[in-house]
Image (cartoon, rainbow, N blue to C red):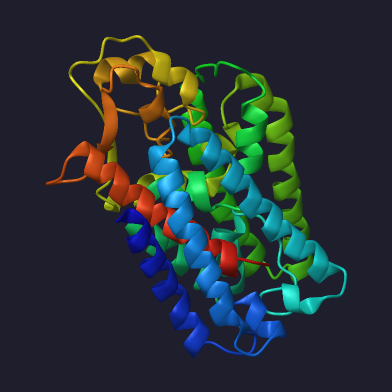
Length: 320
């Protein structure tokens, strides 16, 4: 049943841009072959149906998520590389944009226009909450891979929370300063590129050492926005009263949302992205998805169906 729902939703969501949007067309196949977009939609829908069944039944869904998320990133940046090489059809609009998540906020603030990406982010948060940061971000899988270099994550100090708030505030203040002080776009682009490269450095130096996705949970301003605004989505991860405090789930969480303190409080921390890795790690079946009015099993199936559908849609249409 979940595979049928995933197929249908993916086909439906992709059909609207296929039928209504042109020049440039959002579906890559349509740019090369007239009607090719419908063929692409069919295969994206098949992929969505296959993946949701695969991950629901798997005893190691985190590995599947990591592979598919990384594959999405590879496809995204391969298209970017082809676009930079002169094949402009592989770019979203025919012109290049910096692939730095922070610019989803900073870009419109500096230009005073171009609110498509912020609106896309907000609409996604309505359906899948903070899972943007565990399924849909084109850079996040890099942080996941580097954090997994360490077998067991280290509990981050509480001041990391102050750092992430300060970075978001600094991003907004600096961007508005550049805009109203009349700085050129080239200066802003240089700043955005430097911030993006800084994120890669954070992954290599901190995420790899700590075993926690420090880039996504501390450095990236979008991470804080999704954590806060994503609360409008009713899906949650809940820890049951029968938890025996074995702490196995902590080793599975790369977002720093599960610590000895949060386990005692029986709720994940703010940085939880609903990745679900902890659900499979709990040997006592005391961690699960929550949605009002339905069982934990049904909530997990519903959430995974939604997030896989969005993953497939992004795979087909997300590009620079």
